Image (tube, rainbow, N blue to C red; front, side):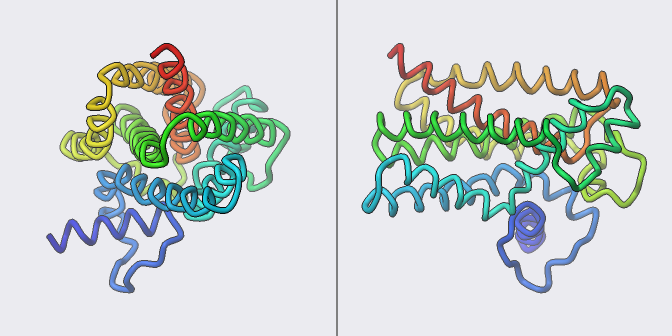
Length: 259
């Protein structure tokens, strides 16, 4: 139990800005094993975002409440995944060789492609959540966030399991995560996403269809990353999470419309 608690705190330390006990170290092996709790970190982000939304709904409009909810998630993670998306947009938008793409993605500056990518992803996230917030009860809104934040992170874990790390430099921030991931870790990570999905499916079995677009976009991204850089980087995982999160919101809206 102590070992698992250590791994959970390691995941929280790496993927969020939440303070953890001082005895939690930065051991590379622990960080790799902690990947099993990546979707559980999504629970934390979803709950904080949901509580922010609920509080704001008593004071403001649904639009402002959604903005504050998204902002809470961004602040909690330190824009970790959004930064990855911006780097991927810049790298694959401006580079035509593996070396050039990796070089651009490692540059801390954000270029035109990155800015456009962030504008579109945040806009889609905002408008889809506003529509969802206007159509469902706050409790269900929280369940939607749990599904989106956990399932989108499982997609990133799947890419880690089925692909190889593209960078050769040992100083990359995602290098410790990029060791061979066991099937057990993948299955445990998947369980964290299955639980909120099961609750959603309990309301209506048709919601299980959201898994299909997530699988499609994840497999496409895996193929795309392998085609251009031979694998993935930490930025690719961030982009995978962000894109799948928005895909889940849009899929729920599409399903909701035809119910």
